[in-house]
Every structure is written in structure tokens, then in C-alpha cells.
Length: 102
Image (cartoon, rainbow, N blue to C red; front, side, top):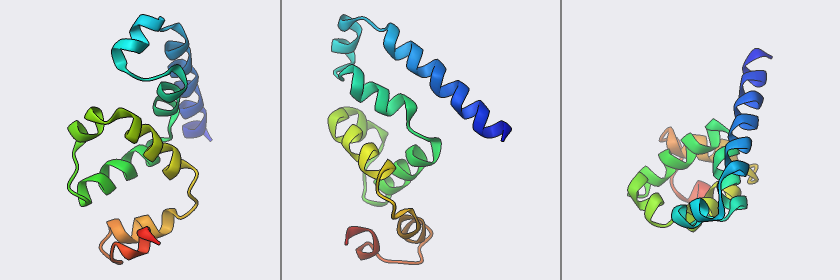
């Protein structure tokens, strides 16, 4: 319960930071406020899974930073997918890529 409260508090803090950004700041980041909100408030397990999955397919954090809009789309897809068990199996080496590609 305490961990959940900590996460909610952190998400609220991050939301406030995103809301406080100026349009110029957003233009510098090259993300819309909504896209940045998606990244800032994504659960840690989604971000960790995204990074691990990207690495398995030969991508690194720099690749994600270079293609920020793709990163946001991937985070949204992962957060709403519902097939986390298949990804966990693939990342643990218990399944081939077809487990997450279907």
C-alpha cells in the first residue's frame, strides 16, 4: 500500500512539472504536453519492460530519444496491452519473439 501511495505521489509531482512547462519548453523537447504526460506518468514496470524489449530488438535509449514520438506510442501500447505475461516470458528467454509479435 505504501509503495502504491509513493507511486501516486510521484506521478502527481511529475504531472505538475509537465503542466508547468511553457510551450517553448515543450517545443524544445519535441513532444506535446499529452505525449510528455504519457512518458512522465508511465508506471515504472512499463518503462523497464520497454527498455528491455528495445534492447532485445537491438535498440538503445538513444534510439528512443531520437524517435520520441515512436517511444510515446510504444509506451502507450505497452501500458494498455494486457499481454505482459508474454513479454515477461520472452524477456526471460522462455519464449521466442513470436510470443510478443502475435
